[in-house]
Image (tube, rainbow, N blue to C red; front, side):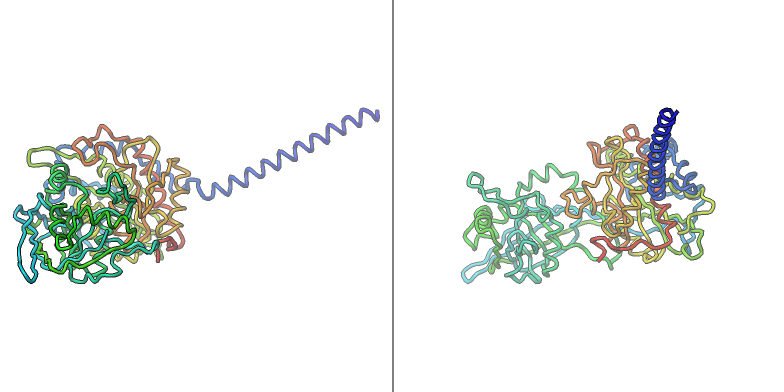
Length: 546
């Protein structure tokens, strides 16, 4: 009896021990699940709207937006006007209204379309005690104007050489430290300083450095007070023009608003033209560049006997276009004056004179279709989120972010009310589940976390490889969110990457992954829903918030 009782006691002890372990593990799992669930589970109030976002709805929307009938939705062209009417109708059907104080969802404005004329030229005036001479150089033969820097101008000024035109404070390198360039034309090499090669002394410059970016160099020159920036091209001007003539010779676009600053005039010139400038120094461009590479330090000087006249001529045309802006009032009396903005650009490259249509199914028909679907999902909310939502279909993105620049200069709702801006641009292609996230932590780390928590529900593979202000491809600067970030509004740029059909007539509906678009749209919806219902404003604590 005692032996049997002992065996039973041992079995009972094992049962209690095992039960205790299982109970502990169950309790631990419940705690972990509860903690993570509180952050990432789909809130019941957001569920109907999120589930309403469907791939087949976006397919139907994009089938019209990317159709031949819209002729590529070129800014200022007939097809874009039709698209604007379509967007307005879809927003209205979703239950949205014009922004407060507005009678229409359209925000019209005028832009200037300009084309450089072939008689544009640069003239070098050389004068010393013994002689004077002039040399004239023609556009597209000896120099060209990069996209975004072209406008009619007439400049006559002395010339100074400033190395590579770079200021690299972190490494103590400053091409402007020993030269006064105020009111003068800066001559500099394209690229950035690189290692000298005895086998190839003509090519010591690095083109892959972030400091080699022409726009960054223009910023340095403008800060130093220069009148213009002239860069010595690494490659033949005629060959470059032949290769990129579709881009270099196409019209440029700008806002008519004179209060907006124009970029510093910028030009790329041939080595032939550079050699003519450097003649008084008794050296060629290749020799000077090699001298710079060997020295490994800045070198600058004034060309005392040379002046340059830059005479750029163009023909202009004034066009009307419009952003389409829809408003959903928030439900909380204390928070409804604050705005969560969601945007996409509905313009593309339009149609050529010979009838080639650039349908722009991915760029940015995909983002525009998702914008409409997200608006419809939010329109079904009862009640709406605490904060108000603003849906902005930007025009003129392909012409230099013109629509978003105009909106942020002339906001229909004061910008200090904006909590965040979420931008969808090209969200329908490439790897099945991959989505690039750009800028999410630049101004607010809380925004970054909210997007990550929303994605715990959606399940996309978020890729941050382009989440940098110094990435050579400069995606952060290349879509409409950038103009909002400049005003310290936290942003996220949702992007699935470029592809072989980018800016080609082959960017068509049949190549869009609508299942992927559905996931991206749901992520943006849920992120916006969470931001709109926060009990506080997003904290500005990112690296660009200062």
